[in-house]
Length: 221
Ligand SMILES: O=C(CO)[C@@H](O)[C@H](O)COP(=O)(O)O
Ligand SMILES: [Fe+2]
Image (cartoon, rainbow, N blue to C red; front, side, top):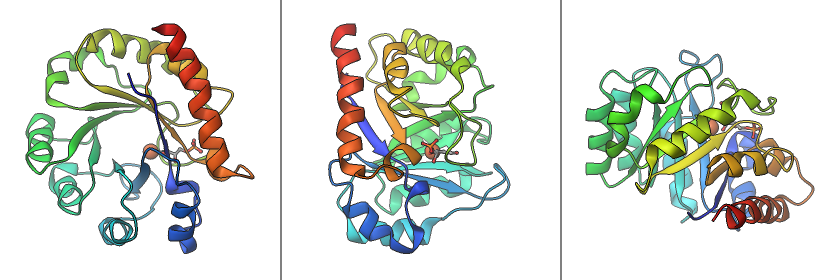
């Protein structure tokens, strides 16, 4: 499965978003973390900023909603032109209805899972989604330490998916130190915030991360 590196704009300079987006031209998408002070103890940005970003880039927009009541708010991000919208299973009231609505609006539907949320009970929902986002830190902040305990969930997720065309995204603490283990476990989409924007050359870091993940996936077959 194709490897994708989607840097998180959470670690970009919010006063210079366009500049920082242009500095990562080799990214496979822009991961945009929407937080509401309720689902997580942090506040970031919302729909107006996503609409503005849409106007200045053709990049694939990968929205990660860490908000209460995604049933109400998520469709607007698809309408704003985001190609992928991920909501959390812990927050959604009707995840199947919401995933269907996102797909109807032309977006890929993503299902996000916190570190303590199990995947096994979600096997019946898999055909409704295009991506499973596995948090590898508690959601809310960039720059946290990768939780190794999530690796076995990545493996179980890939096994449950079988031959379905569903992406497995890992988010949190992904770096040159951890990306190979995530790829080995079965992830193919990698969010990296502090690792990319904290690097001297963010675009070169994307290439390094992609090479490390690809080397593992190549050997995994
Ligand atoms: O969703 C989140 C945090 O809740 C992430 O997307 C972070 O922004 C990733 O940042 P790093 O751990 O890569 O610094
Ligand atoms: Fe995220």
